[in-house]
Image (cartoon, rainbow, N blue to C red; front, side, top):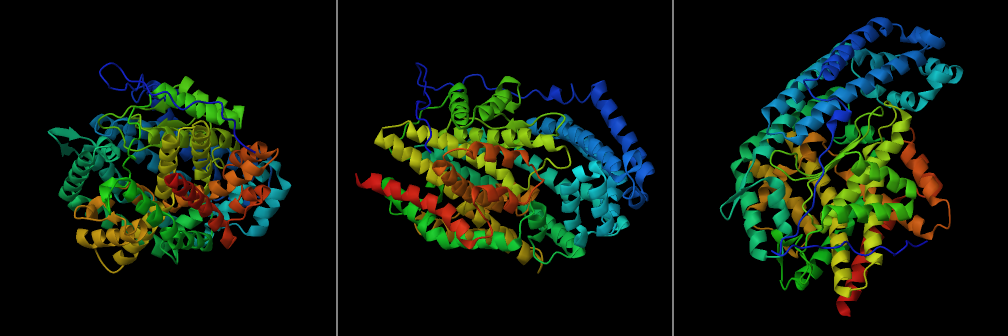
Length: 614
């Protein structure tokens, strides 16, 4: 099955002065959640959440085992429904405060809104903490009977089954209470310190003071000297702030080690695997397959790219440089929007209809501005509201792919919202499926629409680089985290030690065609996933390889693929990855599964080699 190829490439427009306008970039409308932090609606929501949490505790604490043997208003199903409503309310408050903060983390007022909300939500959650703990003390036979005999309880079966998996790592109530309340002054505090420090960083380049996103963007500049200056500016500022980033990394690694030890996790990444509902053996097989493929993927590609750039060896700042003769024109926002929506629409009109709502109903924040959180994300908020997407759009081809990626998340989150607040969240390994699939649809749409060999080569090269960044780079990040957390068990790490661990995995993954020179040893400092979500990064590689296999099924399918795909997205967190992939004939526990996904990247590199010989 092949995609339609009627769409032209995005139009590149420039004004008479040679500058390419981005057009009107949208900002999101957070009033869909609450009018403002000063509004009566927001204040009333905080009061209601606090009151309802206490009332829920008074009503149900110590009574869940008895409720599991009843039905109706006194049954476990009724308790679960009330708990879900509270979860939605607290999530809505937290989403509003968080999105307000990330709109401008440099604004002290936003920091106060976020900090106050986090503190209040922690207090409220302390009244709800008993619920999961008490449920897991009920014997399996009683829970199974409740699921079988009460339809409302049965509705929550996937959540209850998932909850039981946490049971071996559950502490007694007082310890869980302590862990929860202390999180505000431990992990959460250092997360916030990282965010605010990173937002405040400025990088001096040619007399200008730039933010992180602007400076990283210059690493894609066609001028080698500009890329070098940007890299030097990044290295200088990272080096000047090593002390605080080293403290944050050491503190969070130790904090995690303490938690893992108390919860009896065997491996440093087991808590993430449990949260992702994926087996350690599956992740180990993925990591092994990718590291063994380094020579066939990144090493091979970067050797080709060095030749294209006329170098024996590329500098580390040349890794994402555009190819010679590649157009440097900026892609206006409207063209990016049309490109993504058309690609989505050719796959399934329903998918484009959902994505279009993000534009029409102001669910996207696109401009890059001082104080705004760097990078990009799609925040699901809660099922009673809708997701929001944040990007820092600068008009690069990669920004179009980022938009496609985050809208894939957004579509997934809208579809999974039907599962309700407790079961809509998808484990990270599958949460990347829709985003990477959205990227692939957009890329294939553009690739099929071009006939110019130079443009095709440039597009293939960008896609290969994106895949290497998603698969090779993220597994290298995962290996770096493993080394850091393992070494931290033996004592506090210096910035130099962390830098050595960073360089060891970078040299191995990038290969001999990339020259790792002085300054790069501190680039571990700006990766937010290491701080906010330890061991998150392998989910990107998992998702990319999975989508490569999934896309191959799509290309060969005659009918019915879209329906199966939408069922996968609608499932949210109600099914294990094995169950979700079975209709497509895919099995992530099969060792050959990852090889299939990696072979698609090799195939694109093969095509680039063939074009190079023409």
